[in-house]
Image (tube, rainbow, N blue to C red; front, side, top):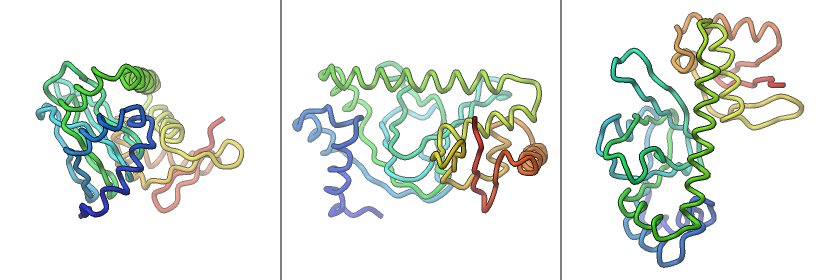
Length: 226
């Protein structure tokens, strides 16, 4: 549980982030008055797809997973939200429902604000609106790249591409071409992201390990990306 006495520390942290540093003191004070800071255990649902889109979130620590399922229930888009990221940007000023579900993959600390208040402040602050538009463009680019890499009939290729995406999106670059993902990723999570079975994901991981292209220890990936 986050105590109210700890809020000032988080507030100062947020003020230094690009997502909030452009707000005036008065504008940030309005956000602060309705801010919530919560600790979530692993596996906690923050909101489900089609829930009322009531709050904007920012990840202080931990890893979250977003998943969107199409109307047929046959296709899902699976992505991750790392620390120091805000969400959801999709549907700003338009949607009344969340476009995807979000769960925690690790214990997490998350800040949230009323969506209506956040949107109202954006309309009055052109610099912050510009930053949000840039962030939305980056998210669109990342999602398009992920879709392009996942549209292949080969399950093995999808697993390989999913690992590259994990390395680039979540990884910390080590010496050379090595990227270490600092979050525990199970083979089941990898399989879901690649749209295949755990068995297939396991086989591909074993082959890549044997070829020296990845290291998988204690559910943590080190990925070699050229």
